[in-house]
Image (cartoon, rainbow, N blue to C red; front, side, top):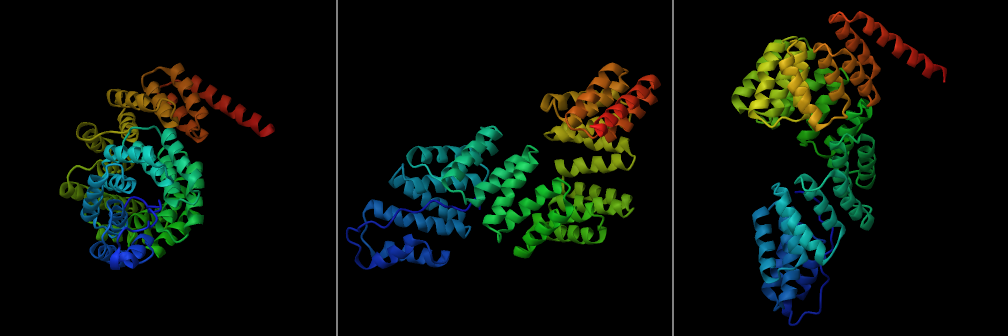
Length: 433
């Protein structure tokens, strides 16, 4: 289910000839009973009353919504389509069909339904649904989508789903402090919402705030013990906190819950390597690859763990699969570049770096691996300039040692020494300020 539907249903009108159905109709439209009871009341009202077309639509809307909340998706969508046949501009039907399309990731269709609804009767729910649909469907950039979400929040500041959706958009673009702010507000508004607690845990984990991340992921699992994404998230947090035993237990629980989900096996493999069981980890991922078939996430981690284990040749076999079989993203190209550098193979590293530069030319890691590739290409002045740009973009100066070592490996000792001296002087100057 995509979002908590928040738009109020139409109020009960004066019924033309309600007969015995008016009490059931009032309770149906009030929508304050259990979903199953609401379905019964709405059906009773429609059976017992003689309604105008508009009144009938007003009964169909809560009936469809109750089915939607109970995950009776086909029934809900059929009811929404029936409403639209009766009145092509009936907003609850447009919104319901919008969420139905959103749930099956048909974001283009969802956007059309929400846009039509917005032109008839703007609401917080419609703005939020439209912003999310356009963003996920690639029809709006993040700031354009957030502008729509913010319009929803201006109309309804306590709209927790909109806050979470905004947070995930920001997290997707590494605007982590802004995402944290949105998720914290969502938790404040809905402290018993497992999704809000997990979202906050996720962004805290990405900022390496392991302890607080653990607090919120534990809370998410207390609220929903079967929340597999939260269980997987906790396995990763425990891994980073150097608690391999509990991390392995959580990874195994993820695998048991979703045996065809690659993430659980990757979590387990990383823990096994931390436990000095690297070969067992590589065998595990190879077996799962054979069983599940190609999976971009799984293949990325097979390559990365092989590289980290000092096996760049085997890593290249896997990373090359992503380029040929998958839809590589920035991180896939950066990994390919790392592997090429480890192999001293510029024919591998340079094309990967160039692809990464075309995607995010100002990214600190893209600039850094470009600098390292330039060193292997003996383009030393360009390499130094690119390394400086990476630091200016936020790269930790701790990477200086690695960069200087690369220069020295290419026998450019004088330039390496100058780099050390220059960065040492910069550090001293800042310390004196």
